[in-house]
Length: 230
Image (cartoon, rainbow, N blue to C red; front, side, top):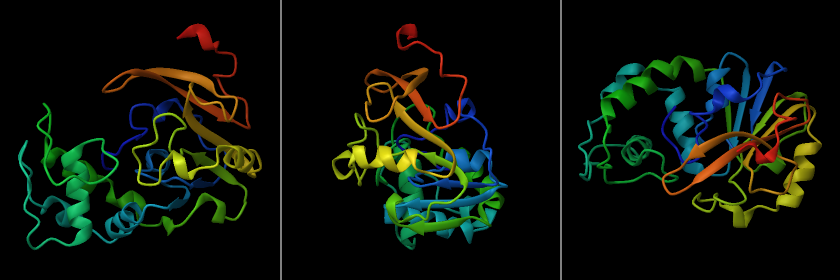
């Protein structure tokens, strides 16, 4: 819903559709997969309290609450006077565009338009009213039949998150992913080696190119793609 580091906004349409009525995102972030399939039974879990509190606040908001937030000026620090923490954090993510933590100074990059960002958020509020949102670890979630969309901080590239790769036992996470009931979709890039990831799409980042990859316990269109293709 808001811009966030590692968001799947550019590739969400490449992932297989959910085969279960319930979708669980254990590393929720900006939850682009859940937003695409918003009418399902949705459970978001994240260890980052800022993200969880922001989602819960947005559930209580109407369009006027979002559109009434201050406009941001490119390259300038925004005024937080009179704003609550969740409002500041939402504006901080809008200001940073693709950051892992809210910023206090608006980016100076071309195309920065806070009204457009707020309008997009406001128009999507109706999708999230019924969602369940929890603060916690992936390990705390009851194993249940669902579509598990698992998008952890990447093994190589996830160090920018507050709860970064140094806090993740990837061997343990791999076994946890393989043990989920129902459909499991795991996101990574082709540098990762903790599961047998298949390449999906080459992406140009701000500094270098990476190739988005997928692991699933159900066959996908990417199973026969050769690693050398990209």
